[in-house]
Image (cartoon, rainbow, N blue to C red; front, top):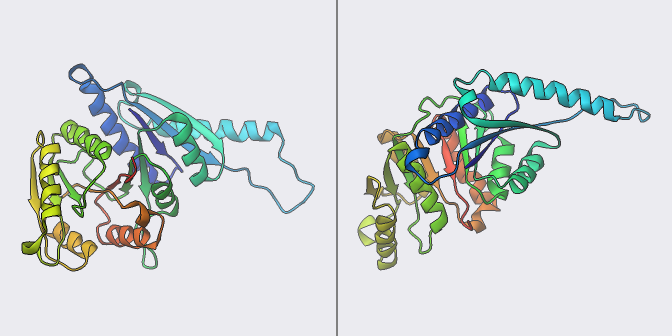
Length: 283
């Protein structure tokens, strides 16, 4: 499994790197009993060369090489602070690019299986989901795991999966989730928020049975919080239960619009220490 960790040398990115390294080390330990390929961490940093206002100023290849070497050294130094990093297959990648576009390009070219990204801390004026993380979530088809700096649990044991129980939840995404749950030896809370849980229709009941079959090899329970607003119901559930990770599969038509942005950022500002794993509906 190829895991991409974008790094901007912030504390947020460092925490994401710790999370990804913990996952990779766990994968490494289970190679002998699984058929998964050896995990590889790809540490990615996008940089730019500051240019003054003088129109006659040009960036030559020597300047680019010098800047790239400096950034590579910083990234290698950061990697060396991660315990047992030498035991994990990893490499660093430096690119002069805009962060969002560079990350997406790297995901496509490298065949990345999972992106683990840091997200910014809460302040009084804005949501803490970084614009780059949200941009990547919306425009790539591989899973993206957003890890806040305040995350304390790097090896989740209680995972919540929020679902609308609409028919056709992506099988590839669910199979990937099962692999992670088995790796973590985690239990899963399947959450469906409904205004009147007692009146859930046959279609949703059938989808629940399908999920029950897919997750048959991992401990799981169903929960039906009552609320007219899904995000509010999820937040209330998380407030009342100990959960280490929330999983969502946003509908594609939401992922490109404001509904996705508002619902995700609302969740993240309310629960700033619980990582969010977003799968793409079209995987």
